[in-house]
Amino acid sequence: MNNKEINLPNHLGIIMDGNGRWATEREKPRWEGHKAGAKNLETLLPYIYNKGIPYVSIYAFSTENFKRDKKEVDYLMDLFITIFNKKLSPIKKMGVKIVFSGRRENIKSEVWKAMKELEEETHQGKKGVLNICLNYGGQYEIVDMTKKVAELVLNNQLSVSEITKEKIEENLYQQLPPLDYVIRTSGEKRTSNFMIYQAAYAEYYFPNTYFPDFDEKEFECAIEEYNKRKRRFGGN
Ligand code: IPE
Ligand code: IPE
Ligand code: MG
Image 1 (cartoon, rainbow, N blue to C red):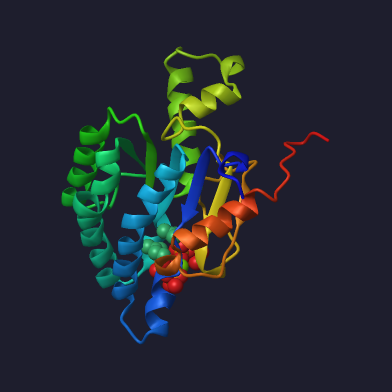
Image 2: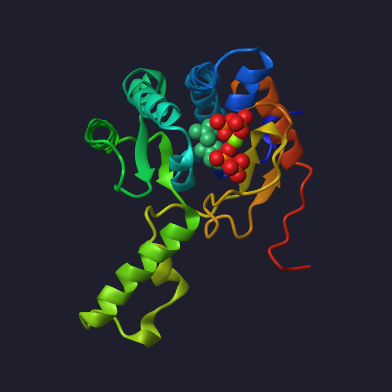
């Protein structure tokens, strides 16, 4: 395919699933799968931004993932610090702005500190935006938005008739364009609470590949698939 003819999503979502199964199939502990997933992210993200996709949202940890064994949760939290400090260096150097979506509660202070530092360090980035969903749940995002809008109404800063789609979007965690394409690796065909508002008209793609193996070649297959989709947005 000629590069000029390729239609790229403006905002891509990735539900990075299958780390555990990747490890189990290799008779390794689950944490090895998370480590391999982080390694993959380090090369995949620069590739995506270099390709020309400006907005990327990744699902790193759901609110519901706190139900996992404490050891796995602790490992993941430590891994996030390593990812923020090392694995994201290539895209930081490229000038990608990094933001987070999710709730503060239950996040250890070291992790929160690393998140805030990363946002601060990259806030002037112009190359693109990486939105990391961590302790994130789409339903909670809607609850949190509703609380913010209700506060505005209670404080007489907004009337009920002024609650519009735009007002709702202004009060989500981040102000990002709608998701065009959501890739969920590992063959699971569900959203698991990932950006359910923003994905209203997104195309979905569910490759069987586990996230640690979802490399540049797999990504190109995903883009090829995206180019086969006919988006209609309710029109004819
Ligand atoms: C995704 O991989 C990573 C996180 C949810 C943090 P999983 O850990 O869910 O891997 P599987 O689904 O058990 O294979
Ligand atoms: C969704 O994956 C969350 C992330 C990839 C971070 P899960 O593996 O937690 O989702 P379920 O439990 O299979 O729906
Ligand atoms: Mg999973």
